Image (cartoon, rainbow, N blue to C red; front, top):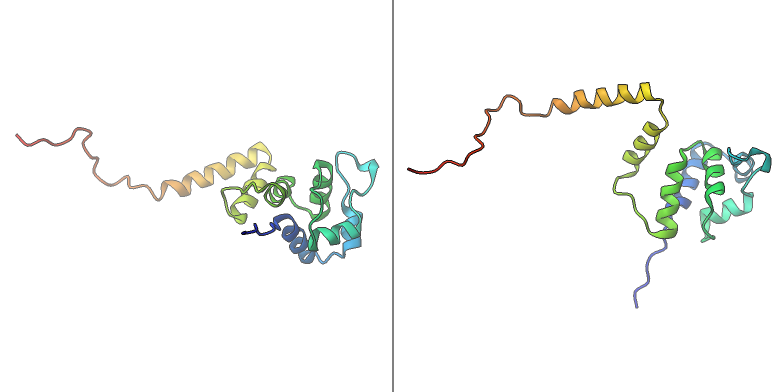
Length: 143
């Protein structure tokens, strides 16, 4: 009987980002406050974060994911996707770099979004074959 491999997307993301930011588990735990309920204090303990990085734990809820995103300085949606993949097997159709770009774009104000769209559209138009002759819409027939 084949067993399905344990998914670790959220665990890997947390471990990688914590290492990049050179945070101890205790330092990260103290930063993990839900921005929608800061009075509640940290939502994670250092022990639970350590377990998240190394073992299977119960799926965190939305407040815990928001707090973790705040503590790691990452977009909430990125942690949502990683948790969805790890706990529910929901895998986004894009690679990690593309997803990060999408999440960062979503955080921009409308003026900056318009600038990014204009830039992408200008790049996209360079690949078009506007100088090729147009093909006739009607099929050629032998007479």
